[in-house]
Image (cartoon, rainbow, N blue to C red):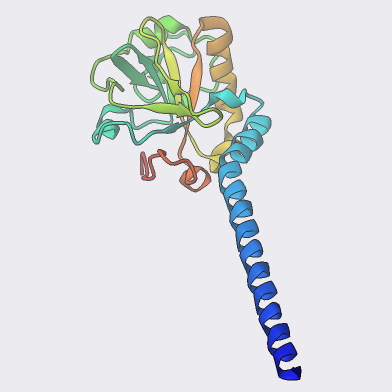
Amino acid sequence: MKNFIIIKKKYTSFILTSLCFFFISCFSVKIGEKSSTSTSQDYVKKNAEYLQIPKASFHYVSKESSANFIDNMQPSLISFVKGNTSTSIDEIMVDENGNGNLKPLNSCSNFDFITAEDIKKYLNNNKSYEDLVLKSIEDKSTYSFPEDEITAVILYSSKMKNFMSKYLMFLNHLRDHENIPYVFVTMDLEEIKAIPDAYQKAIIN
């Protein structure tokens, strides 16, 4: 009888231990799921607050993009898209000092004089962006480029957020005075790896 009680206690102890491990494992999985899915949201919140821009501005490249979408993008920090045409901050030449001497827009120290017309002059169909599918990090909705207006596209990494103030002044100027909205396309792949359809290769090197 004593042996039976000992065996019963051991069996009960084994069951309780097994149940504990089972519930701990389930709890750990739930925590892991919550952590991975919240990473991208935390990323958006943190960067939006730092840059003082709407969270809806942040997007990621979806795997729904065609295989050669990178070939159809400007290899530039800031580009401008209208319909099937585009240009970049590296291609646009402007007369910053009003003396007739043109210089690349990316080398300007003052952006207040830039207008939509300055950008339109350099739009071309070399890079159409038509194969690129962008989705909001916040709500996963697909972004559609307006056909009849210019949109600024910013290739963004949180590593460069401390150097963005100059460009944000420029982008806000275009948004507020020239009706040119902007979208931030994240290159921080580690921060969005939990998003199932996020493209997980470098866009530019």
